[in-house]
Length: 161
Image (cartoon, rainbow, N blue to C red; front, side):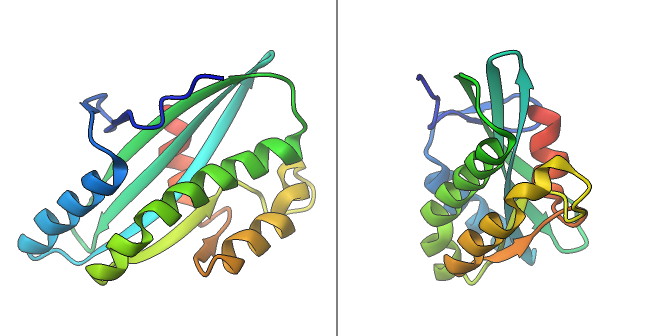
């Protein structure tokens, strides 16, 4: 399976060739120099088209009272998997990025949340992965947010997948 792990873009499609750690640190320095209080939210989403699964991971920078901006990574897999495995793949992609950037965020005293596109209502299929996802993210020491509070996955990544 071929992934484009180091190819990040913004919501308008501008491509960045730097690693996410470099992009995050550069953004934090710039935003703090401009006097913005920021928080970072990481989330992933996926859509299935036949045997193809398209994933998008979003790293969202929220400027308190001043809007937001996002870095997006897209990936594609060709295989059939269960809904639970797909939801946990999304979670894993988010945790992978959260882990990669957490030391930078700590260095600059920036809060982070990990968002999952999993419904808290048991009537929805994605709910099958809720407990596993919550345990994984909280066990890593991150703040966990699920629908309807998980905009990084449910909105930002969803728009780009």
